[in-house]
Length: 434
Ligand SMILES: NC(=O)c1ccc[n+]([C@@H]2O[C@H](COP(=O)([O-])OP(=O)(O)OC[C@H]3O[C@@H](n4cnc5c(N)ncnc54)[C@H](O)[C@@H]3O)[C@@H](O)[C@H]2O)c1
Figure 1: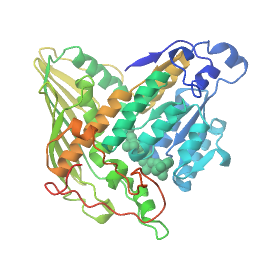
Figure 2: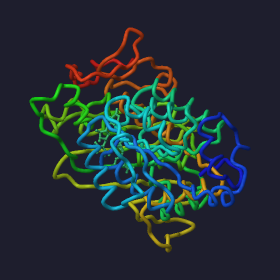
Figure 3: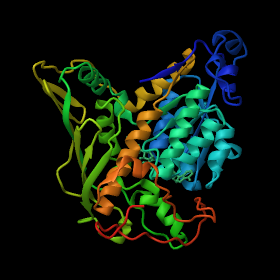
Figure 4: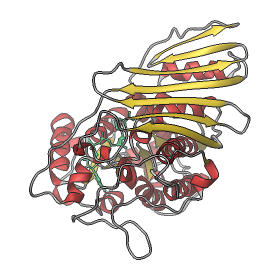
């Protein structure tokens, strides 16, 4: 995990990193003196996207640091925001002092949340992440951001720029790729990166699971509202499930390759069981072969089909041994046998513990590079499967195709509660990559 930062922020300076584009030296004076004396060592945290994960992330931020307060909430929908606010208030009482004035609803909610906090938690569907990240880092706020961080090439380009800016401004950018914070998996990758299995020759990763939730259509909903309420099933919103979920597995490939990205991918995939129109137009299975510059291949598979065998496992094959990662259980076989003996953990909590402890020490954590590489890797696999062609990293990174249901005259996304199309189901050999 890379950290950038200097020692001992006081609250004012920690917070004011927010408003001025101050570099590393900004976080300087001691936390204790002025802040504690003024009784104002509170870190104001805002949440954008008050659903399941966002509500969880808010609770974890509150648990990580006793002086975290949730001061602003934003969501596209009032009902989602209200239930999150109720839960936070009932559990954390006056540490969630959000009121009507600091509850923001609609597509612009993120702007108001960012203006009303010091640290922003971003947990909307992935489509919005590039824009929200850019705004949060642009405004000088520290960020925790859920995976994945883009659904297309232009989104990835934007996030790469934002990651660079976060480094320049010395802002935290902690990723929700939570396995990176799991004690067992961290210890295992320490072994692998320390040479326990020799040089990596090939890798396999898989996320085979059952289906997820669905919301029934209501007559008063526009099609845009229906799609956003069921965002998992629309590629513009989720990136398809290879991006939304399987990114966790692909990130372990990025980890093993020390941040390198594949140069190309070929793939197959389709929609075999989950065919009802309530599942939008996404696939229910993918199998991808990624190839890296040094010739190493990663073989990836993922499935969301009910009543099928669940298998979340990754395997790294090296010149001296093999590393098996089966959910949170790991082992190394070969010249150097190894098994993790330490304690387990709640990785969702640990990522917030790291973030807030670092901030209190005047340090920042920037997970931006790997979170973007792994997200784009997932998009690469998807595009290879949708088109039935080999797609290169550079082709995708330079792609001008913006996934959005509505666009303005300049081709940028625009958002409105109105009628929108359901994209056609991608057909390999017919659907063209662009
Ligand atoms: N790290 C993990 O293991 C993990 C687990 C679950 C979800 N996630 C990620 O977290 C994110 C959210 O997933 P979830 O399961 O909480 O989904 P969810 O549907 O429960 O929550 C998403 C929330 O965002 C709101 N929203 C949609 N568009 C918005 C916009 N433009 N502005 C503000 N709010 C908006 C929705 O109304 C909803 O309340 C996704 O990126 C998902 O991949 C990560």
